[in-house]
Amino acid sequence: MSEKLSYEEFSKAIISNDIKAYTTFYKNNFQKFCLVANKYVKDIFVAEEIVQEIFVRLWEGEFEMMEIKSIESYITKTVINQSLNWLKKQKKISQHHEILASQNNDDFINNMLEEQELTVLIYKEIEKLPKQCQKVFKLSRFEYLKYKEIAIELNISEKTVENHISHALKVLRIKLFNENNENNSSYYKFKLYSMLIL
Amino acid sequence: MQTSANNIKQITRYLNDPSNKSLKDNIEKWRTESEVNEILYQQTLKIWELSAYSRDLEKINYTNTSHRLSKRLSVTSSGRSNLFSNIWFRGIAAAILIFIVFGIYKYNSNKVEYIVKTTNSYAIDSVFLSDGSKVFLDKNTTIKYPKHFKGNIREMFLVKGNAFFEIQRDTLHPFSVILDKSSIKVLGTSFNINKINNELRICVKTGKVLFLPPSNLEPSMLSAGEGISYDGALRIERINAVNENSDTWLSKSLVFVDAPLEDVVKKLAAYYNIEIELQGDIKRLGMFNAKFNNATLKEIMEVIEQTYPVRLTKQSEKYFITIRK
Image 1: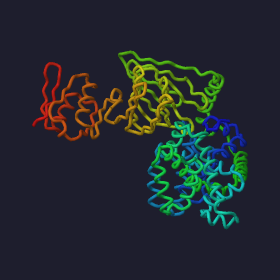
Image 2 (image 1 turned 180 degrees about the vertical axis):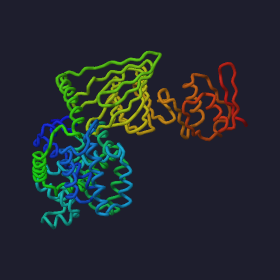
Image 3 (image 1 turned 135 degrees about the vertical axis):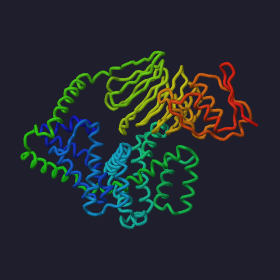
Image 4 (image 1 turned 135 degrees about the horizontal axis):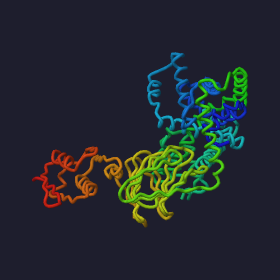
């Protein structure tokens, strides 16, 4: 199965009633779609429900799916629309969202998708960090604790906390930018600006 | 010289307390020292920001969410009617066609088949690449591209000539155009490349392009409106892609933004294939701003006459633009 969500394989799974294959697509891709929804609804559980609902309805054939160049763009657009619908129902729709809604063009969709893909990538790499390092890093980035507070919480020195954070940043940087040595300048410059485009 | 580890430490401390003036000043100073430093900083900052943003993903239980979906699908599957319902019929027909094509493609996927396309000196042409990208070829141009992009690689060659590229965006698979020993990498963008012998002129219209010359030279990042001129050996020069109008051969439109009149004149001479001489005190003149679509030389000259205090004359086949005192 290809890493990128392809229309052929996606519709094949639906037509042949292959729940396992379809669920695998979901498993491999739901996180980035949830993050897209989350940008609008600001509640990850609502986001998850929206994405699930869309996958169920696609399975049931409720949306017309013809001549789609990119199934990912299609799903992203649907996620955004459903998120806006949810906001409308909650009477939570604000001017800001209206503005976001009007930017529903290809560039916007692509950028949105790219940013979420990178976020999911970072998340997966954080999960692979050594146990204590991961703990410290999550307390900093997920719980917004300062190093001093983390040191007190875990009963370690502030210096140790700094070391863990530095290590995490170093590892994540290498993983994300594929950089094995400082001389690999052109490739990592490329990766950098592709991230900075977002 | 500070080691990389030391640098990350500095950044780590700064990110924890960005309001601390001495930490901030240190970092700002270090960043301006070299491009490598700046890149290191930007990469780390990006990771710092996006990792905080990823925290919500922790709340979703990976296994639970998939099980829930599976359950819901099996409920609807059993109740799902006739596969050939109205909505799906056309979808299926299309899908079957795709599978047939897909099947044939899979069979041939081991070797990469290249297509060579050449234009003569009479006409321009264009080709679609297998990812939906489009390449427009000027006269006397040769390109070489795979019939189907294989795996993760999107790569093609500009052998010689002048071409305009409109590349489909694909984050995970950057697109490369190889130009003998140099190459450029793009994500999704449009740009013009002119390659005669070993000399290159690259102008970016939209998006971003990374120019990679042979290894002894520094790469250049070009954004929309930027360009470079490379002599094939050691000299790389930045050029203003907007006023260069490198794709006028295709678009038939000429754009000038804050362009000095001498540059405008040079461009007109080259494009309309005539000789124009600018006489007088050019330093006094302001910049030229205009956009012409399918304009004749006469129309453009008229605008110049209206914009500047000049007198236009023509002797035999040569034009003279004289600045009035």
